[in-house]
Length: 409
Image 1 (cartoon, rainbow, N blue to C red):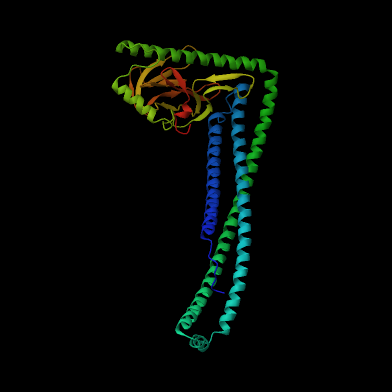
Image 2 (cartoon, rainbow, N blue to C red):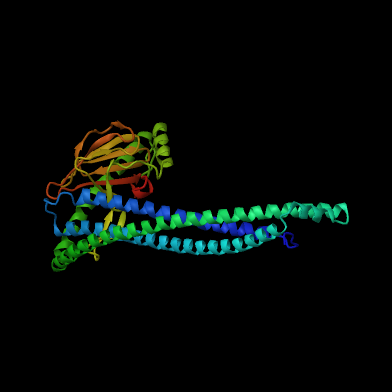
């Protein structure tokens, strides 16, 4: 029958439609997110190989070798997990598409059965005379009008059923095409993942050999870590001492007694405010670099019983990489500390940025610098071939985490 007393539940239909839309959208978003993560990790592994493992002729200490290897293994582990998640996501999507194809095929079969009955009914009453007689045999004009409408609606309904069959058939074709694409993608990811896992296993074997050496010499490695930490602490203490001296000098000039903050000129206040307003969007201190040590207290990546501390972050860079100021400011000091390479301190109002382990310095105390202006060059260790920049940010003399300030650090 064409007429029905029951009204369609539009709210239910809209809810179902929106549910399907947002489910499909979330699947696409999830897939794009995983693909972005995968590309970022692949890019990070490429940087690790270029910056930490490119110069194999240089002899690293066992501890350094193990630190670098651990770093690479952890990133590869993340990449394997992301690839596995991609496979799982595609498998779910394939399963969903197969179920949808089955449902559409079932719907098409029902529509075709119904359409066949309509065609048969239409064939039996196809004579124009029969249609006219059906209308003219009406008892009154109202009934004739209704019968005429019925015939028109019947023809329109048949047309719509044919259109539905056409649309659902097209949907099946599209889903089958998407299904084949997903199956190709999943095979490609599985092949790539196998290659990553093979390389990962080789790295793990090397790691196990180095760990065996480490266990035999753990005490000497602890001493090596502690010596490095003491050198780092001396440098960081000296940086903070220089900042405190600068704060005292600024307060003496303005005759203000505040040991915690700089006494700022209107221009310096504006620089300070602009520096703060750019939090999270400040440029990297180098154009190309890789974060190899984070801010704050943390367990040593190899000797887990030892705690290391950093007032900033350490970035591995290419050789002779140019170091640049992350914001407008003034060169507060050039620190040449015994047992370490030069450090440049730049003041940005109430904020100080520190660039340590430089081989060359292009600025002098009192110079005005602009954002991204070159201030020096990263030192490359001739023994290991590694170029490492230690970068810190201070609010007055208090160290703060550069990750919160530098864009995508």
